[in-house]
Structure formats: C-alpha cells, structure tokens
Length: 348
Image (cartoon, rainbow, N blue to C red; front, side, top):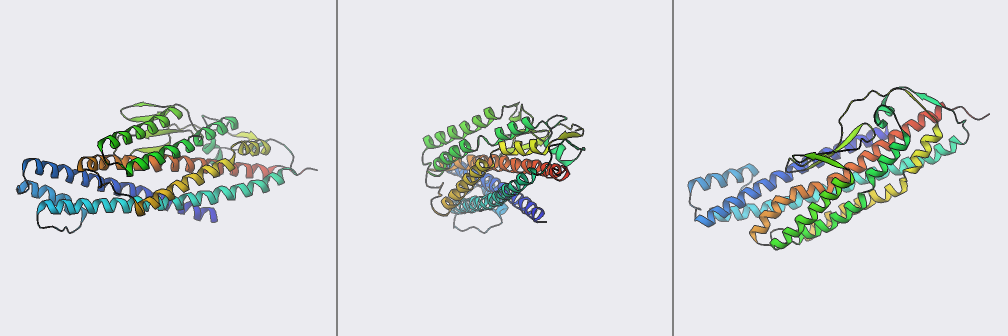
C-alpha cells in the first residue's frame, strides 16, 4: 500500500514537471515574439502601425493579463518584464518539485537498502537452489533481448548512473553562466557549455541518429533504448521500449540476484541522488534572489529567452530520467529476489 502511494506521488510530480516544462516554453515563445516585434517597431518606427498593434495585442492577450502603459511600446516593455517574473516563478516551482521528487526517490532507495539487509540475513538460512520464474513482470522489466542476464543488467545500470556527477558539474557551470550573462560573449560561452554537456551525453550513452533524434546503440533492461529528441524546443530524454521481445521462463538462484544488487553500489547511487537534490535546492534558492536575465542588453535577453527552455530541460530531465529508471529497475530486481527467497527451501 505504501509503495503504491509513493508511486502515485511520483506520477503526480512527474506530470507537474511536464506541465511546468510546457508553461516555460509558452512563456519563452511569447517573450521572444514580443522582442522581435519590438525590434522591428523600433527599427522602422512602426509603433503606430495598426498591424503591429494587432500583433502585440494578440501576444499579450494570449497570456490572459492586463497590461500597463500609455503607449504600445510601454505595454510591450511591461509585458516582457512580467514574463521574466513568471519564468522565474516557474523555474522556482520546477526545482521545488524536483527537490520533493528526489526526496521520494531517496526514501525508496533507503527503504530498499533496509529491506535488502533483512533479505540477506534470510538467505543465510536458505538452500542455494535454482528456482524457475515464469514469464511475467520481473522478467519483462529486466530482460535484454529474450533473457535476463544478470551481469548485463548490472553493467547497463552501472553505465546508466555513471554520468550523474559529470552532468551535475556541467549543470552548475551552465546555470551560473546563464544567470550572469550580460554580453553576447557570455551567450556564446553559455552555448559552448550547453553543447559540451549534450556531446558528453551523446558519447557516453553511444547515442546515434540523424535529424536531431538520437537512439542508444545499447539496449537496457526492459528492452529499452535511450532516446534523445531535439526536434522540439524542449528536448526530451527517455528510456523507450523500442522492441517487443517475448521473454521465456528462466531459472535463478536467490543469492545470484542478491549479489547482482550488491554490485550496483546502492550507497553510491544514494549519494549521487542526494547531489541532484542539492543542485535543485541551489537553483531554487537562486530563483529567490539573483535570477535576472533582463540585466543585459535586449539582444542578450532575446538570446537567453531562446536558450532558456532547452537549457532548463537538459538540466533537469536527464538526471531525473536516469534516477527514475534506475530506481524502478532495481526495485524489479528486489521483487525478483523476494520471490526467489520465499520459494527457496530452508536449510535442514
């Protein structure tokens, strides 16, 4: 019952984050379009143009707000400033949710750690025998191809979480540069940092593809591949089941599954998850104080608006997806271990 409630909370928080991603993208799009209209009006002195008035009022009305200012130019300036404040609030909310999300994950992993200690004590009183597991949830969730190879499962899961420290280190540099960008040179440096993080993720997971859709060469437990889709303004990073394979019944010893879980170094994953939570807390704190992308010139602001949604997604989506997938999969291993432990006969 408790795990079911926790699972529901995870779904609620994930849906909230997806909604916040969409809100950010809408705000960025309107801000960018208003900046473009504003630039054209300034360049050609078109503030009194009926067409410009229609274009500006449409963008403002899509936000559902009343604007202040005597002139059309004043209204645009007021709206952009309010968009920036809304972006800040949405950023802050997203990272508040991530802090809560990681807390739930940490609770699940800590609970798992305690249960595994208890199971390992029970295994000392059990015979080491082969137990047949029929086709079902655990095998489907752990299979690579049509079998569950515990060595492969361990290696793939180790590979999944390995980049988390590097992603966090890159994310700290990116958020600092983003928040302190004042000149186009800062924007270029930010672009380089963002591209470097993207390249690192592509190389580590051996993502291959074209037209900005990349798929991992390796298959992960559950017959999933990592897919990174850069065709949308908000990039997507997901473990997708790209091939349906029938998994036949298999035999396991409980001790072999317990040893596989031990190799996954749960303590280290707890530490990395805690680091992700701390980073989310740092960003949340930053949003309360220093966030101000309007402090540079308007060209810089426009470029930051264009970059902010992809950057926001790349900073929080991969770590959250990686940790979520690892947690779900190791819980499937625990479920398999529990079945094997209960079915193993007691020592005589």
